[in-house]
Amino acid sequence: MFSIFQYSFIQNAFLAGTVVAIVGGFVGYFLVTRGLTFAGEALSHIGFAGAAAALFVGIDPIVGLLTFTIIAGIAIGIFGKDLREEDINIGIVMTLALGLGALFISLYNGYAEQAYSILFGTILGISHTDVLVTLIFGIGTIAILVAIFRPLLFSSADPEVAEARGVPVRALGILFLVLVAVAVSMSVQVVGVLLIFTLLVGPAATAIRLVHNPLGAVSISIALALAYTWLGIFLAATGSWPVTFYIATISFLVYLPVRLLTART
Amino acid sequence: MNNFIDLVQQSFVENAFMAGTLIAIVSAIIGYFVVLRAQAFAAHALSHIGFAGATLAAVLGISGLLGMSGFTVAAALGMGALEKRIRGRDVEIGMILSFALGLGVLFLRWYTNSSSETVSVLFGSILSVTHADIILTLVFGIGTLVILAAIFRPLLFSSIDPEVAEARGVPIKILSILFMFLLAITVAEAIQVVGVLLVFALIVAPAAAAQHLTRKPFSAIAISVALGVAFTWGGLLLALATSWPVSFYIATLAALTYFIAVRIAHFARPHAHATHEHPDGEYIKAT
Image (cartoon, rainbow over all chains, first blue to last red; front, top):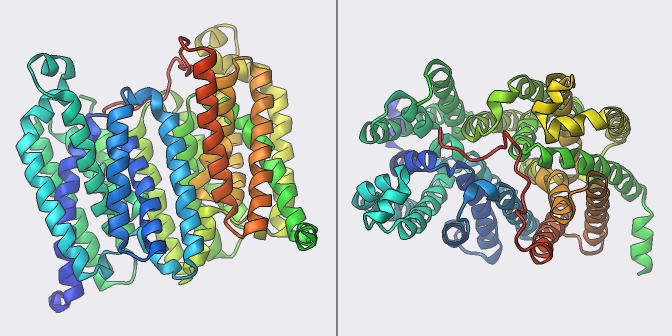
């Protein structure tokens, strides 16, 4: 059973998957507490347009993913002052992005397999270059998150007081969205554009319901994300069902009882 | 140009226009209420749930529209029953949506190794809609319009002011469930035209644009329908002329029109609050 680990594509998958899960679990905590889950969803759809455009132009999709999501993240950070009322605006932008993605895919002419993997993940087929890119961006993101952890926490819990105390709330907000953009781009490789929620929101939402203190919640969130990803890759590698399906199902099946059995904060 | 005219007269094109127009009309009207009731995200979620239905239908060999309707109706009835507790529950809805997509991915793996089928479910396939689905679309569409006409006033009342409506004896819970049921059917239909991912373009965009331009219900619905049909026809014609996807054109037309409408509203009423906030509006909230 464990002989699968001798294959390099499995090793790659686990390596990249581990980094993605840690970043996802970490970023996800703030995504949920700052009420930005829908924005995260929108970023992944916008990233899809970027990936499809990159494919069409002939470069690595991850470049397109990162470019589009980071730009969109900054734009949301600057213009989306009160995201609550921008629900529909974000949805429309998302729609526009998906439409563009659809265009690029149809122009790309065949290799719908590539489109499929952007939409639904491709961790078992991840290239060496992408593993490297994932490692670099992932470690960078984690380092930045650790550095800004306290001020980010402060500005998420109480933006006005934080601002009064000199915390650069707005700048942090934009920086955070850039980190979300990177996290989303990386996660797309594992679960695809459409299932970002399962890695970025599921573990965090579950953790927050179990533990109230931030450090504990972040730890559990990361642990869950790792568990789902490892289990998902392992099950998919030893069977023939998709990784994404396993991760989505496990994520949901763990979230459901926790959600139903715990009280709101 | 002659070739183009010949092309437009093909039966598959006529079918596409017929089904597309009806779906656009129904979507626009339902969309008016979706925006009014701040349930845009629920509509988005229903379409993703429909994906699981469509793929399962493919595995079982039955009509995609039936499969989608089955799943969306079931989900919608659930949402309708949990009405009060669904508002503002982006995380919960997102999780269910993702689970449904995950199921869809699995069913897809069982059904086919062809990725192009996935693409057409995700991005629409109105130009290849089957005869059986056209009949179903007609039946569902007209049925939906009839029911909407019948419940129009009470639905409007309960959407704008649920508490007062309830006090006046309007059965808001039943209306709510009925509305979700109609939304589910409409979503399944819309998926045929623009695919799972772009349902927003047909159901939310026309109505949202209209509501930025006017507050009066009848005017808003009329504008919404006009826009929806315009996007659909525009999309179909452009797609036939250039071979680019229908859904891309519809989505782009819808998005551009929406942003223009927002700009117009901003200049016409610079100090008015543009979005109508529903009392229990669907807002992004932390858990």
